Image (cartoon, rainbow, N blue to C red; front, side, top):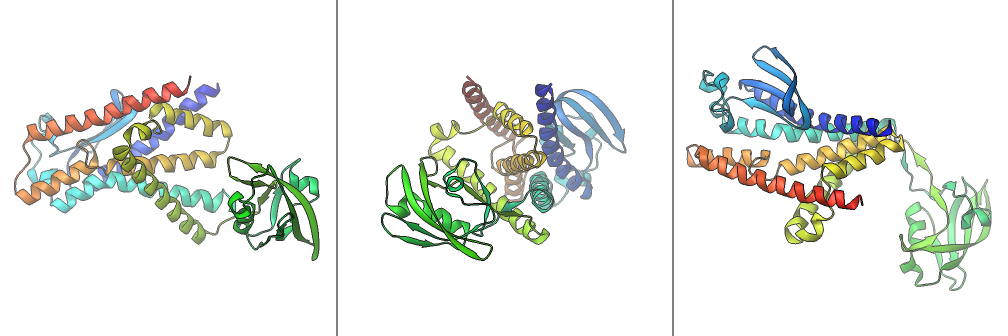
Amino acid sequence: MQHILIFIVFILVLGFIITIHELGHFIAAKHFGVYCGQFSIGMGPKLWSKKIGETNYELRALPIGGFVAMAGEADQEENEDMKDVPFERTLKGIATWKQVVVYLAGVFMNFLSAFIIIVAVYAISVPVQSNSSTIGKVVDNSPAMTAGIQAEDTINKITVVDSGKQFLIGSYSDLQGALSKSQNNYSGETLALKVTIERDHTTFDYNVNATYRAETDSYFLGISPTTRRLTFVESVEYGANYFKEASLLVFSTLGKLITNSKETIGQLSGPVGIYNVVGEVTQSGNFANVLLLVSMLGINIGVFNLLPIPGLDGSQVLFAVVEKAIGRDIPVKFRYALQLAGLALVFGLMIIVTVNDITRLF
């Protein structure tokens, strides 16, 4: 039953991202009067089809893509339904800047939906870490609990017993710095500390033997910070920063794919890897994490589509600009050859990444 739930969530996640992307192209094309013969979600055999106005709306069996069939596209020239469409209602018949808007509208919709999801999640559901030095929670059987430190205590100062070095604590960041190995210039497994806290307007000193943790390269007290809900304005700011960092991470990874391809490919995930991540997030039972995963995947797909690789939206923009500059269409056969090469590159990378995903399962 759990596997069925994970599969359903996986389909819904991919379906949402694909639908939003194709909807962007569709809305922009319709806005500029371009004839759209098909709006399809999924690939392969049709499961459902309904014609509304001049457009066939379709649902297909494989949730691995989707498309909008627009008059004037190179791959629609043999489509019988497109042959009698007036030139001014084709992609070629609208201004170049409008073509660029149509091609980038899918990416824009991925970005916009990701941003809205992030803001909504943090405004409504997910509390964020406060940077105060007040303790939110004390971990069971941790050095802090053993010493007698409690939740709601406020740490004011930490003194290293052996060296006498003192750290004034005004925020959780100060506390993390005081516990870092590099700040203490000490390599022992435990670090004897005197922790000065304030509780109910009274100051107390506690002797704590913090333990070293290699994964964080710092000493562990066993406390976590307080959390708080963001206001809507703060959520927008937080969402903007989240979006920026996620986008830069994708660009950085793509850059490393060129400079250090062997190591970077091993870190990428394809459909199998995404399925595993969806499974982990679904099993956590936290719907907010599922939404954040949707936003992250939307950002990844959006940035990837901006690349000028034939077959992706970025290349369509490049073709439109080049055709405007040279004053004529790029030969169809040449465009097809480039698109096939680009798709071969993308699918080749996908196969390698999928093999790596499967290998990591065993």
